[in-house]
Length: 439
Image (tube, rainbow, N blue to C red; front, top):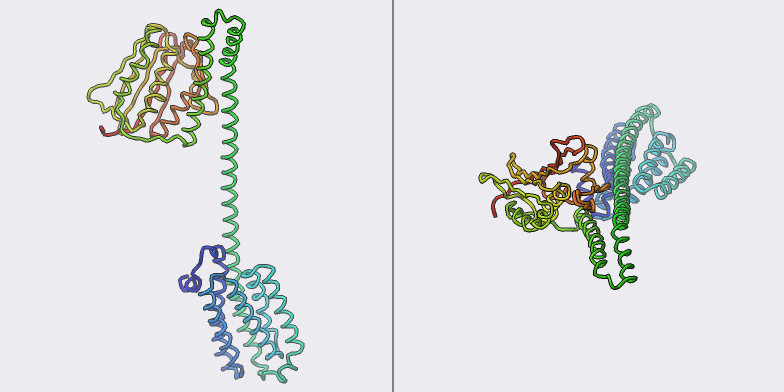
């Protein structure tokens, strides 16, 4: 292949024409070879046309040089086809006594012409050559005055040589043509697959966007109605405005929470929000959580415990802000929401091979087995009502899952609902972080 590729160093614009260029080179080599065969055969048969075959060899060399220094394969293709047409017409004119052996090359010529130049220009070259060959057959004797003397006994040998050479050339052209068609077919098939995948991605993206809009509209309705209702009350009864304003604020804050959750989830899921992963100490996250949830824990008289043995490495690969706010705080907040008064929430840390394992365990009302598979699904965010009527946006756990994926970690949920397991219920979230060295 290197012997062929030497003659056509390809610029970027010609990469798609690689097979056509190779065919021109291959047939130029082949033309040199068969010309040498014909020179030897003509000498043995005593046919005095030795100048024709050297002309073919010279034409093939000129074609190769043109292809080597041209950035486009078409000049070399036109030169190759023009010289081939001239050779065919010349030989038919000289051997008009038995032109059928030479005319065996016409199908090969047509196949190569269309392949290297396309149906329009290749077809034009074929048509022109056929007209010239017809004229040579009809008027060739008048052009040269006399036919080249050939012994009738040599017709059979000449025919066999021509059949072998034309058959070999046809086979070579057909194989290259079939190979190119197969590559084109494979390329089209691959493009179709990529196009289908892109369409599926676009359709999924559009579906996700539509779903997010539907969820936002659905979740905003209640707090918005609350805010509007008490705003109207303030307008009707300004004297008692102080009673209604906190309820308006509560509704507006709920709307803000929903909007922020959707925005954060979309940013994380699409990769727009940068997540810088570095060593983070879970103990620091726990200390922050104690301060954050002190008031809410007190409201239900809940106990928040952190169980971290001294021997355990608490450094993990994560992003500190996201780990604290969107993962640990979110899970503790859920645990508080679904816990009854006077219960406890336990956060424990352990090691498992290359992971640091964090478990957030509550003894609250739990979840049914059917609900668990959907809690991390961004397409169907779920939220339940807390033991004191608390409500969430439903995006907390999908955001947690998306962040754990970014951290190279894992998250799973184990839960038993109070209805089916009255004596042993609650929820445990198991988070596996990649270990990190202390910063």
